[in-house]
Amino acid sequence: MRTPIHIQTSSSNFPRFIQDGSYYVDKTLLVQEIVELNREVALYTRPRRFGKSLNQSMLQAFFNIQTAAEYEHLFDGLAISQNRELCEKHQGKYPVIKLSFARACTRSFEKSSQGIAKSIQDAIYDYKDIILNTDAIAYPRINVLRDYICAKMPVLDDPDILLVFTEFLHQYYKQRCVILLDEYDVPIQHAFLYGYYDEMMDLMRPLMTSTFKDNPHLRWGVITGCLKIAKESIFTGFNNPYVNTILTDNTSEEHFGFTQAEVDDLLHAAELSDCHDIVKQWYDGYLFGNKEVYNPFSVVNFVDRTMLSTNRTPQPLCFWANTSGNDIIRKILMLNPAEGIRDAFQTLIDGESVTLPIVENTVFRDMDNDPATLWSTMLFTGYLKPAAPVPLNAEAAPMVLPNNEVRNVIEKMVTKWLREEFRPQVTPLMEALLHGDAETAQNQLNLHLKETISCRDSQESYYHGFLTGLLAAARDKYRTVSNLEQGDGYPDIQIGALDYSTIAVLEVKHTSDETKLAAALDEAEKQFRSRRYDSPRQFYKTFHGYAIAFCRKQCLVRSIDYPITI
Image (spheres, rainbow, N blue to C red):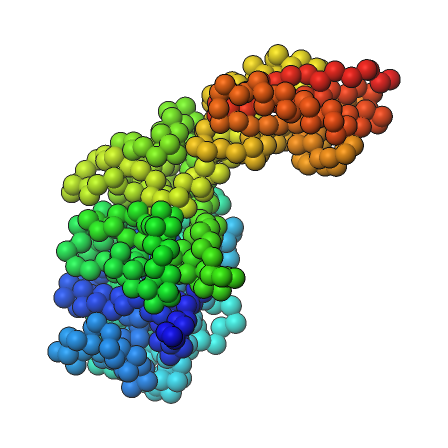
């Protein structure tokens, strides 16, 4: 019987992965790429949760001179250990500064700037022993670093702080530094989302320039994030940085995400090889350069959940899509009118490709009313994929949704956006329902169905949510509730006036067969009457009951008559 494997789903700490015996998909050849590229700065952009932070932790463990003796054995048996010459020359030979700007994700400039400052403080604190014991005469600027260590709430008031830090480490160790910066674009994204973009750029631009441009104390800088921010925004004057995006034609191994072979090995180790097709449908489909890869976060969560489930039953869920990180897409959607992009979303959700523009450099100032920026941001953050490898400098390419997981989140996100977009047009529908006008209500609903996204295999719950979202627009005058017990059951939706003057009760049915739409309407009315959904009549001056039936982008509405109650 095979020994059960240990799956780690929540840590990006490479030493802990190896020391705890967790299953590790070997990405250590990224070290070889960094060394052989020998570029002063390398920028890797990939969607969130694709292993960027774990790779940065691995690079720190490999290069760090402070932990050379402690961590050298962690790489035994891993791919990079086969390159003995490289390991002898570079493993454990450099002072490493590891930073993450992930904490700079707040609604205020002050708190986000404090998050950046705290990350720098933590990096400096890693070297506190040598900093506190170094003679100030030998290194006069040491007090700048000491002040940072001792500050209860560090303030980023000196853009040269990392330049000073690298100068000190270079002088102390007689080796130039390796700087690892993870989540570099998080502060800029949140500044755009919450209205302090100019302030954040004024902070980030000099900090990045001082740290990475012509820094004589820098051996290599490795930067990771989701988006490639335009040079004029943040990378001004950088000397020929290496940029690797999801469109880069990789000639080496794919260092982010899981390849087919890696997924097959994981499923075999977990004794879940029979889940191959489910995993492929739900979590495969990303195209990085010319290599197809799986979402690693979702795959390991699927394996972990399935291994722990009763009878090891496969449970494909939206793991990646339900984590944080959708805000930037929602924001751009709200900035763009539905006209012109709604049809493209419909085609994508239907499983077909759409030729869409590509803007590789993100300029947040251009996002207002610019569909090209919307599509490109969705591409680089993992919501779209090229249908085939993209030629160099291509301005457009056929795009598709990568897999079932992404399709599910896009359906929900876009449907919500369209409800907001068309919310001002809901009044005629509401008025019709509250005045017993089934014909107008039916016409209005059919109009809204044409304006929104139809989802393949939509169930009754989809149309229930569609209606609830539309009717919630009038929450200042009416209370809309779902599945509240009435009579002998739970009608789908009730819209009641706050002054108890009028109420409308709706029972919804769905069919996937157009020829059965009228029968579905009859079924809704039958359930309405048999379960006495008219019971609220005793509390309201006016009562209206409706049977509603949906089939894709069509609906029928029928008024259910009862004696008027005064």
